[in-house]
Length: 463
Image (cartoon, rainbow, N blue to C red; front, side, top):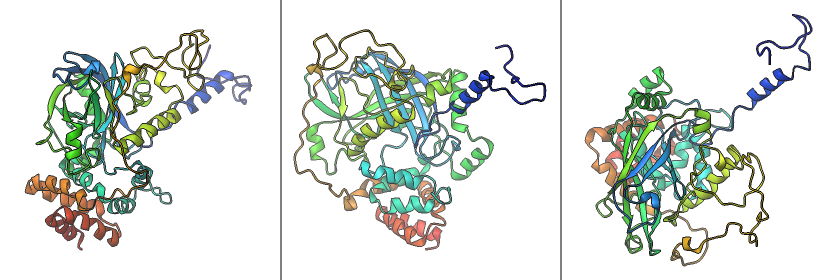
């Protein structure tokens, strides 16, 4: 066009003519430049890099990318959990740690966080948890009352709460925190034998955290502190690294545990299931375009490759359904074909029409299955060993009584006295202004973790 700065008008002061379709196109495009933000993990930063395998667990898995010496390109997205796109990075919140590995057998997504446990174990509770953490429908403000009301009525949350309000609940940056898959997953070897696994990424930069006072000062100066730190470190050539470790568990060990091995509110004790170092994750490049490579990036724990499989973890199984549905809504039907999400391996599918059909499928008569025209077919060599399931189908109450407090108690008693004091102060500050009935109910949970902790919080709240 000859001029992109001035509309076509009837004279220098006249109205705009309807024929100025270029102006209309420019305005229409602006109104459509955004896609819906993620309900959770709306604000994030990402980087590209490599996952290098240096250990050997070949006897446990046939996944090619987990074999010794393999190097796989990855995209890693870090994020806050509850805030919107414009929230401050230095708020006390769960941090997302999502890894997309572009393996030669397809994409593997590990959608984790910076804490090793979840605060619920049944996906039925997930929508209610999200509502309690988001804004009140009347005031449109964050509601500590709703948050603590939900948590105090969900005893299984106590383990994560103790972690979240401890020192490690507020990392100073994305580079200075660990990442955890949290859920148990399955590994399958060449003999079609399965064991269970948890994935841990341990930061090589060292753990660094903020106090609440330091966080307030950081937010006052820079609301993008974590995103800026990651981007600028990589631009300087200071490439962050994490060690990849796994914990391994046999089916027999899982059955012998005193708690459900697939309860995401629990950790696997490292003295029983020691960390095995498997490799190194290095991030060495920033995205060239934030929207194309970060905002449009989609992660889904259902994205598996041969040699990996799903566990009986109920929360994980709920995520398999919810994540795919969210991405189809947020980005589009064929979101997985976008460059940032497209596997590097060949894809054979009967997916057909719909929004964002980006390619022209080859001319073929094999557009349904089964067919007689050589279309892609299932391959029995990818069959997984059967899960040993039994019992009646029902909606079982998942409350486990005092079992929910055992690991939180062990964690609290490993803390030093100064960290215990900060934990109590952080909790009391977060509960200020909450109705006393809810405060008392939540304090009872902390008392069951340790009487000293419960008393310290109560004293600071004046109860």
